[in-house]
Structures are given as C-alpha cells and as structure tokens.
Image 1 (cartoon, rainbow, N blue to C red):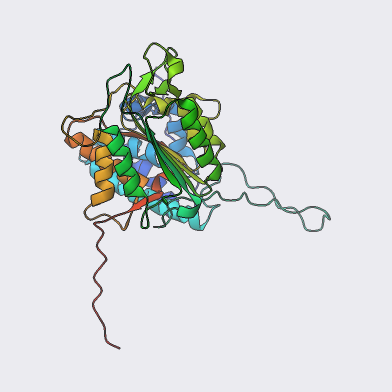
Image 2 (cartoon, rainbow, N blue to C red):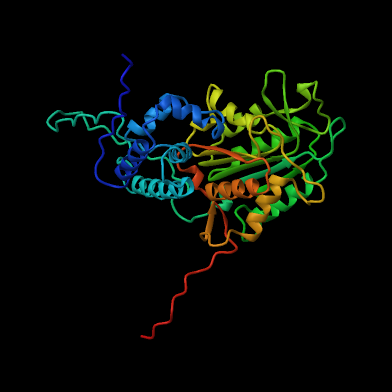
Length: 393
C-alpha cells in the first residue's frame, strides 16, 4: 500500500487578517490538488533563486507567524497555475491584498502574528523579586505607511565601472549612475546631495570599500548601495564586481561581493537596500542564503538584482542606459500610471519585471525579509490626488 499523504495542519489563529490569509492559502492548496511541499519547492526553482526548502514551504502553511511576502506570492502563483478556473495574476493580486492587511494587523498588534513559541506562564505577583517576562521589542517596520526614508539619516552610494582595460567597455554605465543619483537625490529626493555619492571607474577595491564603509557607519535610517558594471564569477563560483583593471582569470583584480555584504551586515541602518545591475548578479541571492550570517535573515534588508544567477544583463545599442538601470530611471522619473503616491521597493520590482518581460529581457530578481519590500523609495510623479469637491460651510 502507498503512503497516505497527510494534510498540512492549519495554524491556530484568532479571527482577523492573519487567519484570513491562512484560510485562503489552504483553500488554494486544496483547489490545486494538494501537491506536496516537495512538489511546490521543485516548482519554485524557476521563480526563486535559490529555491526554498520543502520545510520552509511547510512552515508557510502551518506556522502562526506571518509568512515572507515574496515566498507567499511565488507559492500562490504556482498553486494558481495548477488549479482549474483560476487566473494566476488575479490570485496574486488577491493574496497581495490579504498579506498587506495581515501585515498592517501585525503592525498594530506586534504579538498577533508571533505565536510560534508557547506563551510564558504568568508569574504570580506574590513572589517577590520576580516579574513577568517583557515582550520582545518590535523591530522598525519599513513601508508600513507612505513615509520616505529620513534623508538626513540615510546614505546612498552609486558606484560602477564602464571603462575597462581587459573587458568590453560599457559606455552607458556612467550616465546611468549619474541619472539614477539625480532621480533619487536633491531637494525633493529620497537622499540628500551630501548624503549620496557617485563613484565612477574606481581605481581599486579599497576606494570603493572606504566609501561603502563610511556610508554604512553614518546611515541610521536607510542605506542604499547600487552597482552597475560587469559581473564576474571567480573559481569558487562567487560573484565579483569588475573594476577598470579586472581580468577574468584573476579574481583578486575585482571587488568581491562578499566584502560589500559584510559592510551591509555591519551597518546600524534600520533599512538596507542593495541593487546590482551586472551579469550573474543573481549569484548574490545565493550568497544571501549560504553565508554564515545570511543577508536575507537580517530584518530590514533587501537585495534586488538585474538578472538571475546564470544570466547576463543587457546594454542595448543606441539606448542611453543599460536595460535594467534605464527602466529603473524611467520609473523614478516618469512614475507608474494609477499607482500610489509613494512607490515602494516591491512595486518598483514588479514594474521592472513586467517591463522586462514585455521586452523579452532578463527579469530582475529580489530577495527580502519581512516587510522591507514595502519600504517607500520614491514619490510617484504620476500620482493623482483624489478629487474632493468644495463644500461650503
């Protein structure tokens, strides 16, 4: 006789948005034929890099805490494609709203979605010298409202290489870095001119790391690091960021991405954003998961890459910027029609994915923990305030 597949147990939750999300996930799982967590994990290999383990999929359905947003959306997409009569994009939109409501509920009641551990027994007040355990402090929640980063307490570094001695030149890198910096800084920007810097064709890794280290130490609210240029893979399969004198056969001539990762981990900034516009930039996603202290496991950190681990990026002939940076600049400059007043990282990421797919270009990848993906990054130039008719007193 074959083994009987056990149904995933629903977590015990109080009535509210978190329970609504859990019930909807289990209902979607049923409509998809109840595939195993291993089957779901296998299907995610084309959507997430690296793919999650089946244990993590199991936790998504059975744990009481709010699941990771990106993992939830990918699982929903897989299940919706398996279920009859369901439109995957519509289901993703529905679950996006459910997750957002659950996230807002958690902000209002930090203890509502953190019940993995049994509640501590109350200490009888008659015992002198003993007090009830204090609740864990809630980490800063990014993106819970349309509030941009505090520009005075935030730092950004835009660096990259367009001119090379041994590699093909990328003549549009410099313009992309300058234009992106202009779109995100200034009087009405996310970062101040003094709190953001552009570093083009740095002489060596030390010049970059000195700037990154200084920014990571100064940033208290938000730290943003942006690289554009060639991405190289060393003999151990790790990602390196090319410098003017970099050679493909000499890894020591490039800037190891792991050094950037360490600087980000050491920063006291509440929110950290790393964006890589280079070939094989998706390798950094693997670095986030395999390192002793994974970047993805740090609350308030997001990594956005221009391509998957095995993909090259594009510098289309005749265009003023690389494909990824150009689309990002276009979104920041021209906005998203019908979008909200403030554009968060996740909305920008999804818009980048849609535009890249429409042009048959490499699709960006993102990895984030918690609500950092909802961090507001820029104002939407196309936002239209709701019309409010004048009412005389």
